[in-house]
Image (cartoon, rainbow, N blue to C red; front, side):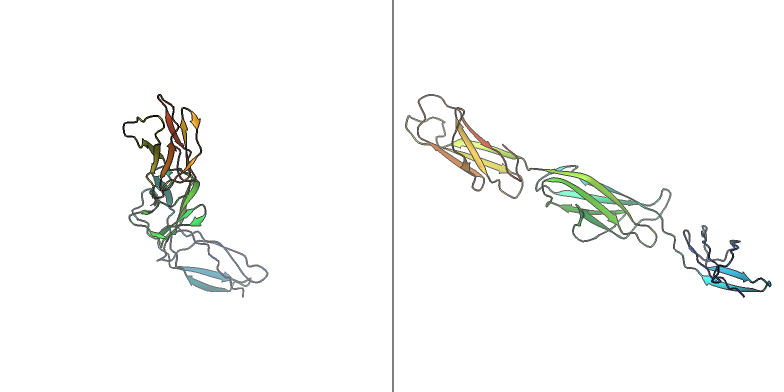
Length: 254
């Protein structure tokens, strides 16, 4: 007697009742009969295969099935702000959506990745959302990914922001002189101070180039955001003093 074996490929609902699929399969040379079963919506707990040999003798094989149907999900990823400057706090929010018409709320976790590397710990999904914030993104273009783990009732999904842009932090400069009235006498040393400020925690570094009437002077280094230039050979008359900061890897020019 040839006893068939059951191979079921299950793709839909939980099983709490018996069902007949009407499959009739011929055994192979090893005496095995295999077939796929697309389980319909509705509960099913058991599948029974009846094997019949050439003489008409039959036997049955029953297999209990524990099938959990998981709903497909869609994950979206949003950034606030949509683009940022170096050192600025950025909030990334992943929203996990079940199929339209579903009343379920996905749980589980979301793993965020920056340029392919996991960023921080996995974040729990609460009310369909998970968020992470950072001030540590370097200047340039980054790929941000959100990978939803899935749960008992929902399938995994993911979303990607392929080109999140971080720009150098903007700077502002003030220029003051050691003579508050902006007047001096011939031969009097005058000190000019350029102060470069930025909104990020890192103070600007680099150099400031001062010029007198369009003629540049040697660059002065920034120390704690301050550069100093002293001039004692100003000719009699009115002069234009200019200071230019070219920026660095983290700060914009001013």
